Length: 272
Image 1 (cartoon, rainbow, N blue to C red):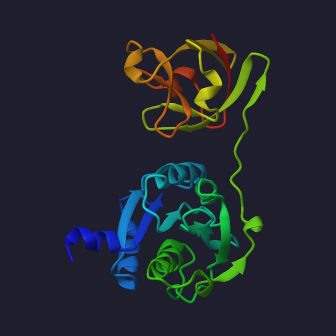
Image 2: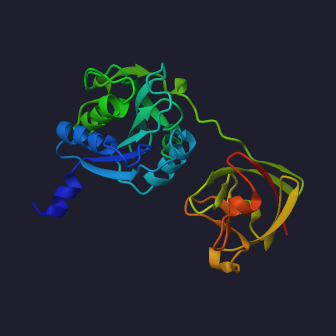
Image 3: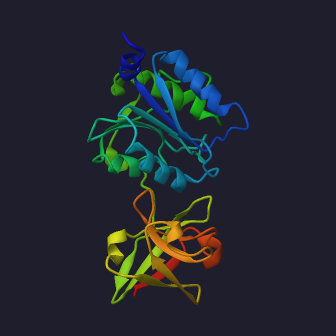
């Protein structure tokens, strides 16, 4: 069998977390997966998320999985580790992807992008878990070994206790609204460059040449463009970002700093 064919046959485990790379956490999870399922191909989606930022993890997971091969998708952003929050494995209705992680809203946006959840199990006391189970490192002792077992072909019913998809914890997000000529949007996320993603579809402002932005009692104008260079350095541009959101940027600068906004802040948009 050629190397390429072997790679295609290997079970896929993707891995996203807020662990960072300053210690052994990510590497140890890799080791646990490799020991339980040596054939697995592990794809790191990223481990530099802001610590304990479940929303950022959920949005990153949803954005990344549209490009990932179907398989087992492990995600760990878990500020409630060691508490009574549940540990999950779930299967999506479309493509039968399996998501593994904490029951804190992290997994559901990605699952929704694949038709929702068909079935789910609580894996907190899984027979596949490493024991003793650490109170503070479920990524190593619960999530990674269960993800590896599922990649190795173990049925989901064998790794945990069946629970109803309707009982899963949903991610709470603000909702945009429209009032006459104004759209009330919210900051969904801010990336490392200070670009501001909003919770409205780009189609909301189709046909406009620019936007008048009202935030914190002030007003700013943003040209509608396709990329940062559509405006001079230091100017605001509204564009469709790589995740498909309407977003705001400052060419060679930070839109978040220019507008003085943070996550969940409201902006009023008026097309011009």
